[in-house]
Amino acid sequence: MKKNSIKNKILIAASILVLILIILLFFLLGSNSSAETILQEIKKDSITMKFSSSGTIKSSNEKHYLVNPSLVVSKILVRQGQYVKSGENLIEYTNGSFDSADFDGVVSFLNKNALPTQPLLSLAEKSGFYLSLPVNVFEFSDLIIGQVSKIKFLEKEYTGKIDFISKAIEQRSDSFGADVPTVDVSVSIDDIDENLILGFSADIDVITSEKADIITIPISSVKFDNEGTYCYINDNMTAKKVYIKTGISSESLIEVISGVKLGEEVITNITSDIQDGKKISIVK
Picture 1 (cartoon, one colour):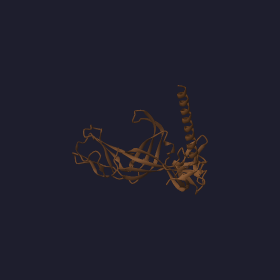
Picture 2 (tube, helix red, strand yellow; picture 1 turned 30 degrees about the vertical axis):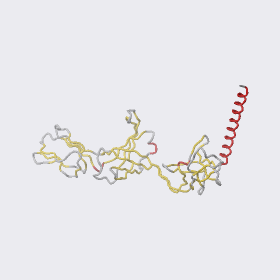
Picture 3 (cartoon, helix red, strand yellow; picture 1 turned 30 degrees about the horizontal axis):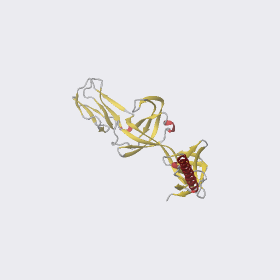
Picture 4 (cartoon, helix red, strand yellow; picture 1 turned 135 degrees about the vertical axis):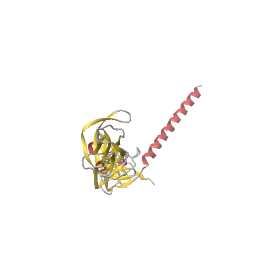
């Protein structure tokens, strides 16, 4: 039994020694290996910052055509949702008279059973079409009156500008039923045509900031720690950690105000294997 005990102890000690040697070998090999990197030359580019959302197409001017108690309606000549031209007849009366459209627009409301002095139909002015969007109070700080917007509706693009930002907060329910504080923003629409449908939703991109001819690096190159924002650059095939001051950003690029120079190469694939002072190699 004693011999077996001694033999077991020797085997355990040998196993531990082998494990230690394997760890040391792995450490030595790892310290001499290089981290595989993807490098990109630092250059100047342009960055456009956007605010993206969706809103509802509305009209800023609507006229209501009331039932005239002294006349009898013979025929309603339009349908709800129909586009009409200024001067086009809308309602025909038994005495041969008509109510006509005061402007180009769309019939936004129609009630054939309206009583006297009630609206029989409403006409929304075409030239008054705009996009109304409720913006979360935590997202609207970059929006200002006059900013150019791109509006997309049914595969067609329009341009416009922010012309109103409400000074009052409204509570709206989100898709989960929770109250969300919002601010109403109105965007004018250029080149309004009959493709636009009142009450429908349209997508919008608001250009909040643009800069051209600035030093940029990929977003994927940027990291953060307790000391600030940093990236790694190629220093004779060695990773060099440098702290940078950044500016505006897009989905793929970020402006670098200081910390790097044109022509330097930045590492774009930051992994745990990349450390300051470690040798690097280029991914082939």
